[in-house]
Length: 115
Image (cartoon, rainbow, N blue to C red; front, top):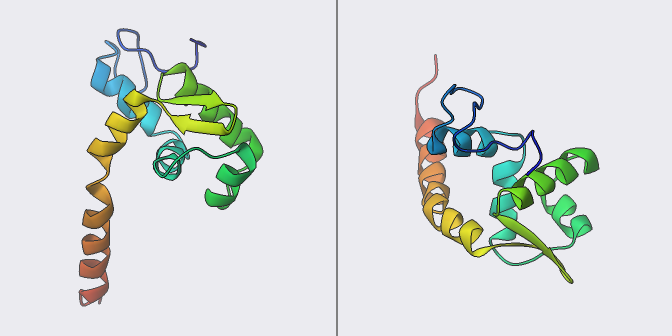
């Protein structure tokens, strides 16, 4: 794995010990990492299609995230583009409930009186 990819057991952003959860949070906290996982949850996409779905992501950032997510075993590149691996699908299944929760949260915030 490239040195810039968070590796459990090695120091990562926010943790000198590199606990696995902290390595995961470091990886997922990088710009567009969660967006890429979310977009690939519906199936594989080519680089261009993924870039279009990720709105304003630059090709440089998208390429870097794909390399990191691939090195971390969450994304794989195949003949038809990029797709979630089995581990990536498992992670997405854990993240999926955040979608409806975020919708409810947004509705709550929009309904709050603002001074």
